[in-house]
Length: 72
Image (cartoon, one colour):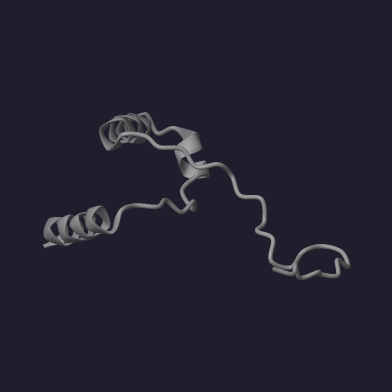
């Protein structure tokens, strides 16, 4: 099979921007850390308050239902 050549003229438009590495943590450990930080009014918690967090869809749905039940 004949290879196809590409002309390179600078930055590759398809390249992804450098993203921060992702890590995994158990939910129970994360919950304990965040609960303690909230109780102790830690500044770093406010510093990260605008950050996005990825959750599995089923956990997100459960949390939204719980939130609605608490406000009712």
